[in-house]
Image (tube, helix red, strand yellow):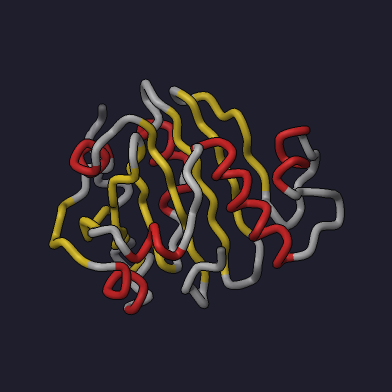
Length: 179
C-alpha cells in the first residue's frame, strides 16, 4: 500500500488506547474531526518555528492509529517511550529522501529500531516481511508496511484509511508535562 504522501509520512499504532487517551498522553489538543482527504491534502506535518505537529488519530479495532503527513512525531523518542507506557507502539516513518525509522516499543523498552532502507541486521520476522540486505527504497516501504501488519494484525489498505474519521490534533513536543 503506498500512502498519498509526497514528502513523507509517519504511521504510529498504539495498542489498547482510544484516540482520546492517545491525545492525553501526547498532551495534544483535539481541533476537529476530519476525513482522510482533509488529513493528507494539506501536507502540514511539522510546522516550524514553533515545532508543533498536526496529526490525525483514528480507532482501528484494538489500536489507535496516528497519521502524519510529512512528520516524524511518531518516531521521536521523547514521545514514543511515554506513549508506550503499559502498551506497545509500532511506528514507521519515511522522509522525502527515502530514509526513515521503524520502531517497536513495548512499555518504554525498544524492541526494534532501524532505518527501513538500510537495516543493520535483518531478523527472521523482518525477513518474512520482505527486508533483506541491500533493499531498495520501494521494496523497503512495502516491507515496512508488511512488518507493521505482522506486528499489529491490521492490514493497512487505502479502504481502511479513507473510511476512518480522524481527530485532527495539535501536538507541541517539549511542552509535555512531566508524567
